[in-house]
Length: 98
Image 1 (tube, rainbow, N blue to C red):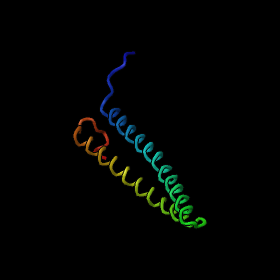
Image 2 (cartoon, one colour):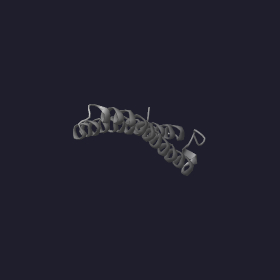
Image 3 (cartoon, rainbow, N blue to C red):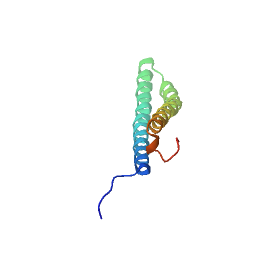
Image 4 (cartoon, rainbow, N blue to C red):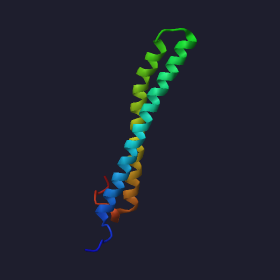
């Protein structure tokens, strides 16, 4: 059996899967970087100001909403990019414009 070119729905599915993988990779890498950065910054400030764990706790707790906001920004930009690709190539979209 010969291999035929992928049809429009397969290409749209491939673009969606690549975008989803990219978003997951970005969020998976960015979240630990934010949290570890907050940890080291808190530990450093605790050492500089001779406080026990005040800054570390504040920065760790503060890194959680920052991570969530970063996640939302990444997802929104990916969705915007995905929507613009489907608008540019309406013949390749089987989703109907997400």
